[in-house]
Image (cartoon, rainbow, N blue to C red; front, side, top):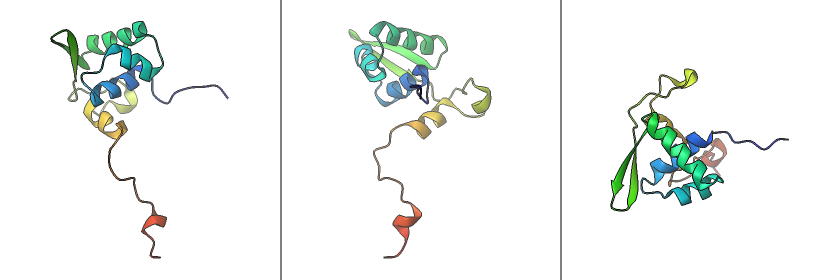
Length: 105
């Protein structure tokens, strides 16, 4: 079976930026398994599409995800970036309980 990802690198980069607005390109590249040059291109694409706003913070960049914008995809055009990020972002909460977990002992 071929190796593939459920989300594109652009989507994965957006999720990582949403989780850490101060993420460095080097760390983004490592998390995505791409080169720093590719990570730079992904952030540039997201910035150009207005999904991400890049702001200087001293010598570093900070990013802000535009959660109010609609997703530019026919299947999800009625959803905002924020809704999709919330749905896909890693949560630091209790795992969902299944029916078996709720059954009386």
